[in-house]
Image 1 (cartoon, helix red, strand yellow):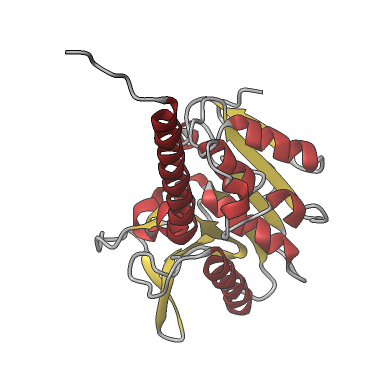
Image 2 (cartoon, rainbow, N blue to C red):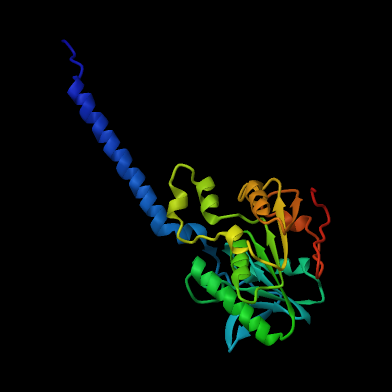
Length: 266
């Protein structure tokens, strides 16, 4: 019995089929990232965790949590992309104990209705600033943004009356850059709809600006924070040891006016 190998035409056809399958699969992956990026970016929880702080309500509607304190200095906390306000109340322990602290619940997170998106989070933060200023006339407002929350915090630098101080912890420079570094095999930066450009938003910011990064951060590599600092020479910059979620071990308690960290790398 003589076995005959397939001819050249067979292999050409096979190569074309494989190429079509690969192209279709890649296109489906790109389309999926475009359509599902909100689910990839935002990870709210709704577990009803009992909060250790009081509810923050505006006109009877729940918008977050509040730690009461001196209204001369107030803080707005903007958390990362995972969880809900009740899960991050420990952030308040890094802020001056005498100050009033508001933790914003993002739309679609925890007990707050809505659907998370960059626009929704930015709008909620702008509204929060207006409500806080109305409730605390004459107060000095500082904003503390962590991870994804650094994008929302930076956005507030564009307001006509921006916060007097902005603190960014484990931040990125541009969300499109961050997406591209996470998915280098995709045209990620062109697919990002929920884009924050922290460098551009804070370019003309005149308030006090602090940036904290973690040297072993694998979620948002420290190179992004270093690039952000290079774009914003007016910012004070501190590197802390550890990974993305280790900043709380060494950042210490911030002062009302200047950065104070327990174990800065430099």
